[in-house]
Image (tube, rainbow, N blue to C red; front, side, top):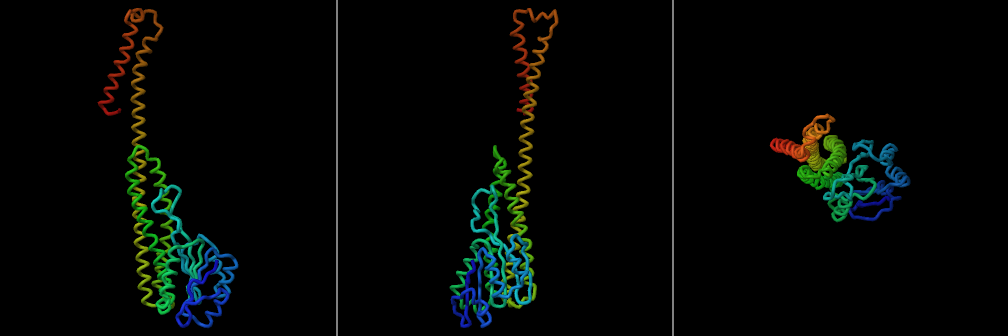
Length: 329
């Protein structure tokens, strides 16, 4: 669905605008225009291309999903791919099944307009639109650069609570590893590693995107806006460092989990081995008296049977005592 989030007219007032009149409005001149497209249809993308005269390759990129974050400069606009956290991420729930999901966000940035394309609601985008509609006069004075900064800053800041929650859960996992049943811990570790790897694959290119935006000579961003974009770049670095630290902690937790599992298996094997030795010693006594020799005095002895039982139990207890001394039990 194509929606005009913000239309600041030439006199700086917020007015309604039909999507079909976008090109006419741009030709007549306006302070700022923000068009948002949620779950774009082919007709929406066609309308964008016609109204804004976007390059066909940019429209094609906007229609595709799972693209790497990037900046594509064109003659009169920029096309940027960025990723935001999905709205239904549960930062307190269990990790099984994967929680850290992102929404791809395409941005067309022009001299006095911004077009955002995405599949599904993006909370930071909604919050920024509401905030700037209430301060349209200030936004019109500062231009599209500050609007882009506000959006990217909100998107990046939304990573922090998620990463902080994951870091806290890593600490909990390290404790659960040493509990009696740590199979769930192993599953959670592997799930969180997969989630953080996916997040890291997004953050790395996004850092490069911000590096381009703050270092390239972009006419839409004045020097004051570049300073704010530098702050977003710093935030991405902080999130990236936090993700890397969590991944290292998870790697250590996984090693600890495997070590604990190996130690438990060794303990089980040692117990089974000790039990087998005790039974083998008792079986040896029984085997001696089970041989078919003609002359075995104990077989005709009145106390032969009790003696054999007592001997087997005594041998078993002696060996058991030795194993207890060596802490095999």
